Every structure is written in structure tokens, then in C-alpha cells.
Image (cartoon, rainbow, N blue to C red; front, top):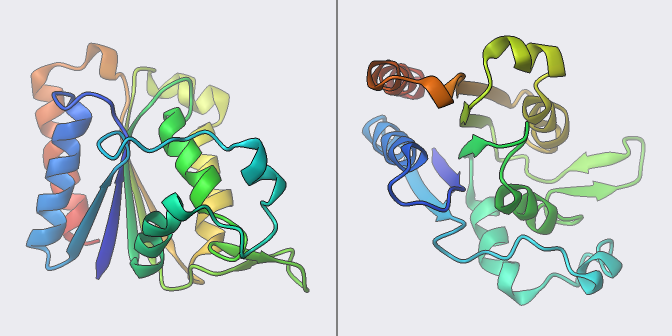
Length: 194
């Protein structure tokens, strides 16, 4: 499977960077072709400009700097997002990538019997690998907002029956080295069956 790994963390020495490397190695060991899209490394601008918003529904008006991102998304049969959850959502650079790249004509078409018609129907699997500073009970209390974004916003634009795997470490702010090691081992096991 061709997997696009979308990574969003500003620090190369972060635990998220170690998770990115673990994900890439586990997927490659399972026989997948992995393309890494390091949003900070590519200096991706997450801001949706006034001009982009004005031309949002014009399918032929895509910004030239987004062509490489759109091509990578269209090549993908699987998606893996690796990021830390901040303020109950993905970092602005990841959310901005979704805002600017998952466009009408790319990710979906508008109209017809279904309001949104999926266009990324080659994508059969999505995984999100994330960390939360918050404890699990607080995420249940607030309704897992980032999971809802992927479950109800992103996944329906992919293949019918697309599976979403959520692999999360909660309580990251107090995680011991042993807890991190166990999470990495669980991550490897989960991705072996991706």
C-alpha cells in the first residue's frame, strides 16, 4: 500500500519525531511504501488567504505551491497522521494543511444526492498517532474533538469502508520513559496490521 505520512511537530528532538520514525519503519517493515510529508520541515504555510477562500469552490483555482501536496494525497492508499494534540486538536499546521489541501475537486465534490461526494476513494486506511497532555477521563468529558474531526470529516471523503485507527498516548505531560516505551511497542504492533 502507498502510505502518506503527514507529520506536524516543530522540534526535531520531540517524542513526536520518534513516533514518526517508528511509524515509517513499522510500515516499511510490513511492506508498505511510505512517503513522509513533514509540514514544518517543508515550511508549509497553514494560513488560508483571502484569495484562496474567495476561490475555494472554483476547482481550477488551486494554488501552485499546493500541487505537490495534492499529488501526494492523490497517490495515497493509506494515510497516517503523526502529531501532538494541543488544545484538543491538531497543531495549526496540520489543520491548515487540511484546510488548504483537502479542497473541492481534490477531496470531495459538492452537490447531488449526497452533499459531499468523496474524491479520495483510493484511501482505504487512516491512522492517527497522537499524544495528549490531558488524562483520558478529560478527553471523554470533552468528547474527543480531534477524533471527531477525522471520524466524521476526513474519513467519509475516502473509500467506502475506510478504517480509522486511533493510536493515542494520554497523560503525556507525566509520562515516564517506561510508559513511552510501552506506547512505542503498542504502536509497532498496531501498525504491523495496517
